[in-house]
Length: 305
Image 1 (tube, rainbow, N blue to C red):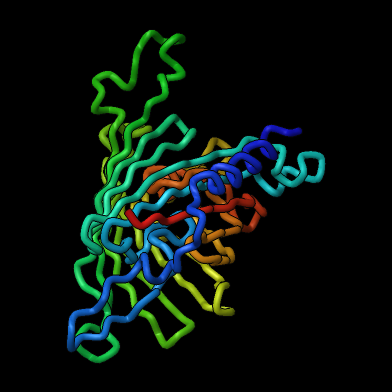
Image 2 (cartoon, rainbow, N blue to C red; image 1 turned 135 degrees about the vertical axis):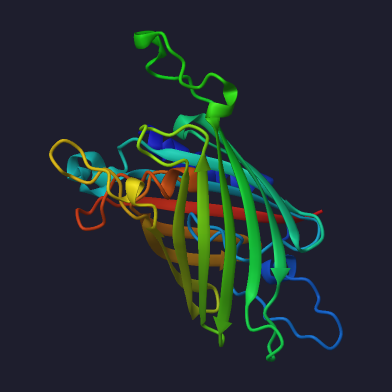
């Protein structure tokens, strides 16, 4: 059995092991009861992440989420590599816990550069069904730590990750979202990613982008999703190799959400290998027009504690 199919098998198995014997309705775990006199809009998105990107949603009070994210290789690697299923895969596992229905804390790890990520997320304002609050607003602050060794240290004798702060990067994001009727939800998120250490002397430590997220409900349990980030910092957006080919591209992804009780299963296509902001926003190395897409999936399970 190919190693990627093993990963796929164990991903489903691990979720089954951690599942409770009785499924809980996802909406009841995601949403708080609205105070008297104010009716909040519910289920703008079905999860705290869409595909790679965060949404304005937070978990319900004392709710824990366990999430597995997986990306296979590039589709354009051809049939000999099962259109990416035999290629190098990336995976992230993470936990997210909500204290009071507004404040979320998350921790995860991805095998890309053995990076550990942690974040805090606060739901500042919730859309109401009346005219009082036309938008939902959520703030995000995240930090990332590269655990891998410097691959060039054995060659040049210099450790680029010394001091340890060189391993750190950060992301700050303000998310603005609105649900239009029962079927359409849209989100815009100005984003800043800061690197303590950059790849080139000409690169800036701060990178800015605009992230767009959308969801269209198809059936009661299924929705079409899409996300895109437009990079505003030109030194990252215009890097080219010696032949004049772009090194990095704006990340884009689209897929389908399927909800079954307390589970949400997401299958999608994305041009990014990375699954955290410090990876997929600045360093997406494949292009949509060249079919540099990857099949991926996310599985999440929520628990009321």
